[in-house]
Figure 1: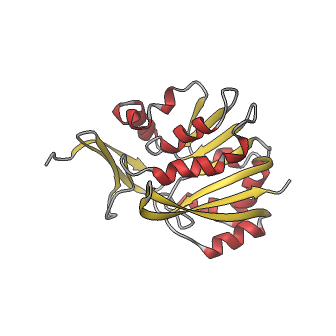
Figure 2 (figure 1 turned 90 degrees about the vertical axis):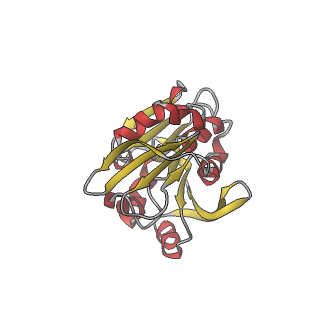
Length: 226
């Protein structure tokens, strides 16, 4: 069996732990120190693609659409978002950890067909919160895959996103009838309640980790009413 080779490490801000980036043949893995299992694997990405497909379904033909992707990961969410919008649109991706951006500019980028090279892609290196608190209606779709779901795992500041205050701030930066789509490792009834309290029209979908098989992940779809 081909052994794993560690290619790099990165520190998550605010004592969030250490990411370990490894390769085995044409397979890539990102793990979090102290946590069993992988955060990401280059062969398991269907639910990330579904996040974009579902979150952008209402703007596939809209001119000058603007999508915000929270979390670059292995690039699959960004790649799918770029496929979901037309040539006159743009997709901003916010990534907290600079090393993750650099990994995607290297061999890892080939897995998602190098979405960072698309001229419509704009990279914001920093906390996605910086783009979610402007109080200006900027985005037609916001796709968030920044953690394991409503309970932050890798970065404690992510908890703000899932709070009532955070959801209300995000509502303000969505354009009329905009969509907030959030990836989660599983369902969360109380989070659905918070979304509705913040003013969204809410539905949930199940997305498999691999197409037609694998773990069942939850996609929260929260639409701005006006």
